[in-house]
Length: 487
Ligand SMILES: [Zn+2]
Image (cartoon, rainbow, N blue to C red):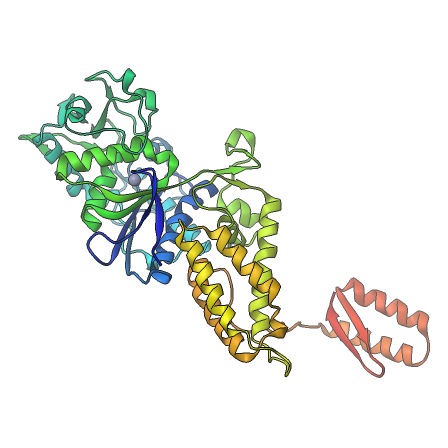
């Protein structure tokens, strides 16, 4: 069984095989740590998590997964200007260091980001590296220097720009995205990290220092161009330094295809002379109640908002897998509740499998092999999680645990253990025994009620039952005993 992935580079579903044998090298564009990541961002982190788990669990490949942290960028500088006592001091930073506020803000939200992804079941131990842009300034300046030396970059007013006109003579610009180059005017420069497709122009690689902004020294042709990196060059340099180019798979949200990923491809080829990645895989957007998430519409959520509403983060994780990664996900609270029910339907089944089978249970072992083959085939088909789950539900509906013998149960537990290596939302062990603490006064009321009942004083017994009920407990009577349970 071979994994097939939709490759944005070729616009085709293609069979996947590692470029240089094993391991599989994946680079995922990570967060710009200027604020909390919203739930749409969470989808862009859960997608490569699913991918790397399928590669490990189903394909059996070792994986080197890298996700970067963009900790120097326009929005970080903009939002750090105000300062906040909430941000933790960055290690080794001086109070008068101009990098200090930006570094503190970035470190604060980096920690929040790592907390958030851990909460939704992404294991930081699964990463080969989580590089920070500011730790790779030398690698970044080295790449900028190479691009200039190769004739595809130039200096203007202390900043360095990518010469798109020159590059378009040498290679195709617009490999992931059909770019309307009609409006392209040679030599027009853009300084912003984010821009629209009708603004195709020479983009910035290195930004000249501005008063109060973080900056680093950069020697180019005997001059010190003090400044800071542009956003796009950061990923090119960190990908190259962490994994070597080209790597196997580059992931990101669809919104990153242009300009971020197009610029990454151009820079790496212009500087290092190699392609960036064999596969480019993009996850689609998450919408809320059928519309684009936005603060002004009041439908903008970060993970913490969901937790505050009492939502189990594993229900969010499971819900994300109810839609294939490259289809728009319509987030609703009703949908989240359905996901919870579906998750617990499987959880209950796993618990049931641990119970002792009855004498009449049949042997169903062969079906487990089929189930495993079918479910894994769906996952290998461009990570089709909804179809994989459909197969699981068809099986558990057709084969209630009560009718299965021990051998089948053992095989199914092994299968769900494997599957949980991907979904990671179930407990594989026995159904936990819930012990309820019953307060002494409730025990006392129950005893008084039992005596009243024995004395055939039913009015008193009913009154006592009502008081017990107010305390959140119920009494269950048998012929000559009673038990107390949580209401
Ligand atoms: Zn990136």
